[in-house]
Length: 112
Length: 112
Image (cartoon, rainbow over all chains, first blue to last red; front, side, top):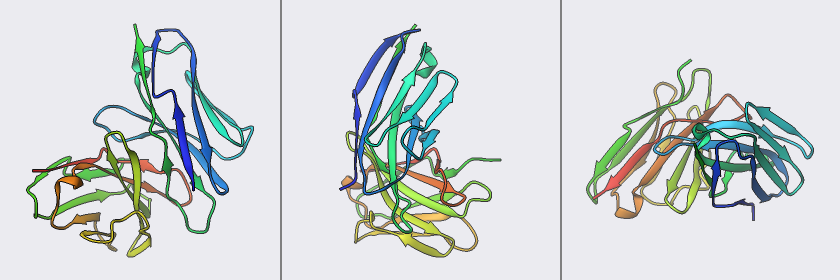
């Protein structure tokens, strides 16, 4: 069964204190792994798509990496505005399948 | 380019009533997805539609739930005879093809 597990569930950082979020997955053939950010009361906001092991993508203070079993979201020198829930999802490579299988997210709080 | 639009943003229904949730995809996107988010359970896939066709409804409950994406107009998620367990945030996403899904702000359904 396709599954996504994110850790830690919650993370509290001081402004400027770098850290990493983990997303472990099992999927019957990976089409893509997706990172989203979700603020309270809003819909998920797209951050990155990763397709193959070894791939890396970067945007401002965020960098996402992918291996055959897990993905990391590295946050460098975070700011309070980076506080949000970060969601990881996978899409299996099977025919017309497009559904995303989601983890429960990591709730990040960055204190000034 | 406007993002994915959903309405209403908040919907209150009494048990036994019908709920209709509407979703207008991003311009140029012909693929629509519906997800449900419950506290402590994360996002769950419900259905994937293209214009006038249901492609994958493997996440839809067998009874009371239906979805459509007509040739003209928004996609509709319809819940008949709502029960308290239907209370959740319902998110719509769209994509231009086999690509990243972009999410709307969601409809928060409360069943009294």
